[in-house]
Length: 81
Image (cartoon, rainbow, N blue to C red; front, side, top):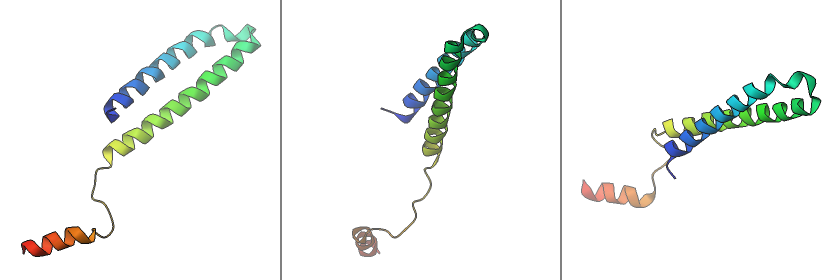
């Protein structure tokens, strides 16, 4: 699965969680069990947001790799020169 597809899915889940949370928060004041539900949804939202941030960072980090090149690459480069 493409990383952009995963990010899109996570964005949709986050929006659904936010919408569900907003709807439940209006009804929570009189129901303690609903408070637990909304707390769980808020925790899930934080996890999804963290996952999105991590995947965004992975998608952006396409810079040069650090470290020594494998020996076979150096052999090919030296044979060309």
